[in-house]
Length: 83
Image (cartoon, rainbow, N blue to C red; front, side, top):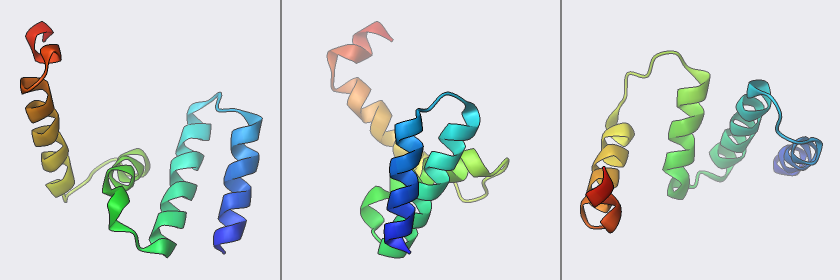
């Protein structure tokens, strides 16, 4: 199954990302692959996949972490001076 997903992703990327539907398909397939590997390292990709696929997300734990990490990164960099 993982090989089939990688083949689909390879073909999809070779055709180019030109429409919103291409992005949705890309994230859905990446999510399937990550689910099979049970790799928690890519939780941000899973968050974006859920955001793309669902109109409402009840579990905002990861979104809160992302927001906090972004705020901390901005506060500790020169970028924060421009925002």
